[in-house]
Length: 141
Image 1 (cartoon, rainbow, N blue to C red):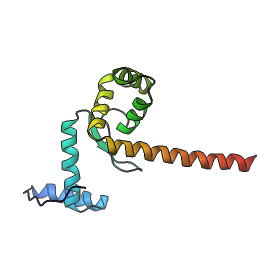
Image 2: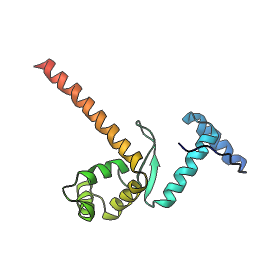
Image 3: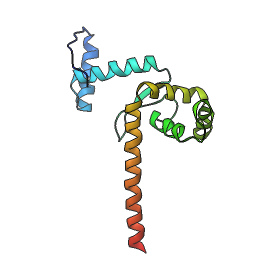
Image 4: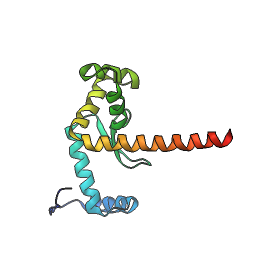
């Protein structure tokens, strides 16, 4: 993680009030929440078609009208074709447009480690769930 540096900004009082309320609900102080929003805003500007959403597994990048980036990249990386040929394959498989797949690939190219971590976490959870299912099946036999 990069070293933290100080930054001061004047904001409208109503914005700060909303930031404090949102931070209290999210369990973050207003500085950390503002930092998250600034970082996400820059990422959204740099990668059109990407937004951020909350969920049980945490906050993650996703396509504005589609699945999470890690889900798209999981299919893209598993495609039988490589390179450009993987784009239409992934689009067809996920019922997306090639432009949506390209948005996810562009984000992945910039934040590869972050997305690879999401993919690995999902793979681990799937393996754990399968192990539970197999034990249940063995107990029922």
